[in-house]
Length: 501
Image (tube, rainbow, N blue to C red):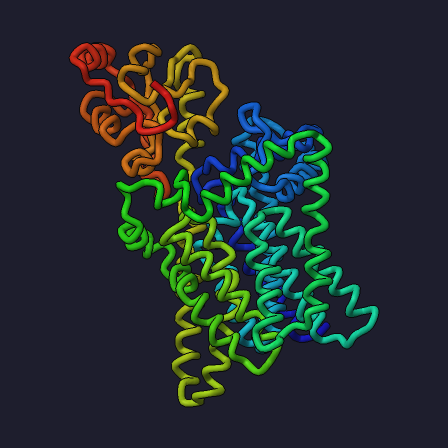
């Protein structure tokens, strides 16, 4: 067995340890997880993906189809929240493979030692762990992106012939799988490839076109199924909205959609959890520019990959839908390009070898520390609140839900309903209210921040759990007399979003 494969195996074991430990408790349930689990179940049952009865085309079905296969093979079931928690194991495995692929990719670019450092950092990166620890489409899509680039490096090593042609076809199909999992990955795959045709003629035009032709095959199959179902107009409508959201013309989700929340303050607040991840996000474009100046073809291509991926992240923060999951592939690109840039800097300025080495060591140690911290925390407040209410409250209890995640993660349940205003609490006969402090106080829930303040002054907490994601998850017991008096006095506290009364 080649020496570097032993190193790859060790890096893989480290990545697996980080992803397996705390997989169901280290991250609070996220609304997207529940939605994706339900869509995967629909596909497993042979149905077209829908949300609330409407066909769902905002994202392509690649990752959902993968999870559908797992559901069918393992016979998974239960409520969508429980199904999402079970399917988290899939992303744990895929995330581990991603780390190994990253190691192999960096090794081909700059050698075993930088690749080992990159592998350790990616294995323990707290932001990547957060994504890999949830049922998010970014994990399988990111694996396909890096796998495609690894195959492309093999393409560059081959002369013209049958073996190179098959590698080009394989590269295109893997890129196509990434796009079929998340459309945005086209910017991380085929766009850098086409840019490499222009930039210093890094990639032959015919090679790029053959890979491009193969990369659209999976998506064309998807479009063919939609057209055969007569749903292409609905697909175009949802995709147009998705594009407007991505470019920032329509602000529905992300930090830029909630003006009461300062992104800078939020980043400062989370620096203690994701500091090394933020540094990698910032290095993506810079390291990419350095790599793109290399005389070596393979390094220039990876530099372009990092630059374009980083630009997507920068644009989303300042103008687009600044959702945290957009940063996943940016971190992957930075982990690939930064070792390349570091090796090039040391070659240009040998005196900086010690500084670069010290920086790499500090990054690895800090990432390990933050990764251990991220996986050892208990942050499953919503599931704990659900289990407590199921066990402790009378079955006939009327429970008011106040957040988007609560709506999707806890319904359907008899007696539990979205009631995000004082008037809806009174009219719905609510006896208890479930709140998640951080989302509500920052304007991300249905109920207003003032609604939470009223509960703190007029209701009794009967269950409380504090976690880093949602803050205080609380079940409040209402004082019906105080509620009636507040509403009769004209205090309604209407919801901030959702269309609920």
